[in-house]
Image 1: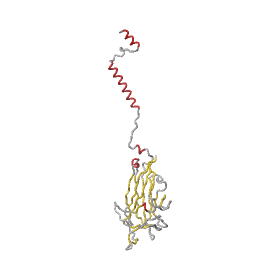
Image 2: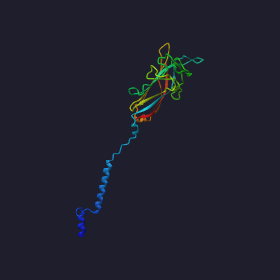
Image 3: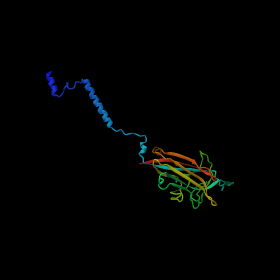
Image 4: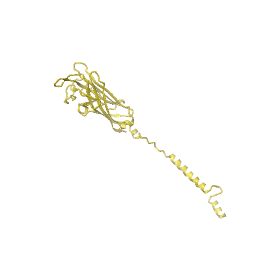
Length: 256
């Protein structure tokens, strides 16, 4: 026994210095291991996952605005001969501007689509007549039956429009299919569309048929990421008539 005790002392093991039982010593080891695990877990940084993290990665969004159609109601100009009498119509010209609320408009300087030529004079080369034929004078449109839903109007894609940065000139030839405007939109901005349509009168001032101003937004990142809306609206009927107007706004892709 003395020999074993001496060997234990030689190995540095002293039961007298550690009066705990074997079970107590085992529990202490387990507590130390658990404490080490907790410290290691606390050192691991777990990233916070947000549902909107994919949206936040884009700094801006490419958005397409498509001009769909326009219809007219309560026109007061009875100057269109139908073969059996005169009907309501308008020598229609106008302008649609599409832009964001940001400085510069986000439209690359090509946010205007002109219908005819502002002021109602000159060669239009622009088919807006009820028969769909080319017109070298202000485009004549027949009065259209109108209802809040299901109204049939003139399709912008099928009519000659010119691309421009202003209502006062054309920067392109009149052509069909010029009814889409591309925008770069950032979170916090809105998409604004304005339609101003007139009835040309050679002997008096031109009549205002419709003025529509619609704003979509301000738009958040999430709203821009899933943007796909159809705007169906109308002007307030004035003494010379009114119009209904439809367009769509949809996101094409993210801009990092």
